Image (cartoon, rainbow, N blue to C red):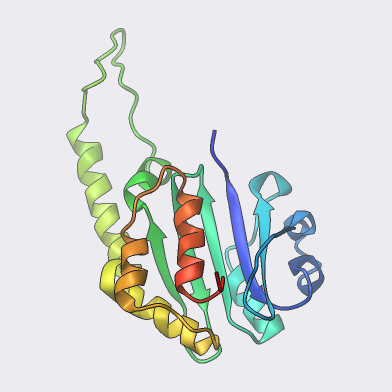
Length: 195
């Protein structure tokens, strides 16, 4: 079983539970060891701590006035990254979107009324819905060079020194056994981890 939870990346000396004390799930946030760029911290909020509000990014940004980045991990298969800056608007990207699809759209069971249909059984209607949903997500949260340009602009707005667009794109389009590995590679490419 993989990790389910959210990484909260803040430029703040205060933990997220102090920044937004009304959100109970943030009380369980644990600091993730760095090193991180000056003033930045990364916090881990496990799903077992409770649910986070859909507008957590906006709430954190409103209270801190600083750039914020969140990484929502789905069973270590995929990460949904969203961020906002001081002058750069919200952007988002998925790391390993193809592995997220089974979490976003529940696949059909490989059984009919009485029979196991086999390991290679496919449901064409489900596969078509997955492709439609995948394309909708990519229209809103593009990866590759487009996503990398947005990520680089956010990093510069956050007063970080990001890597090249090509280096960032290689992470956005990467593949790892544990999606969190790609997330931390992305933080490094954005200049949040100076090593």
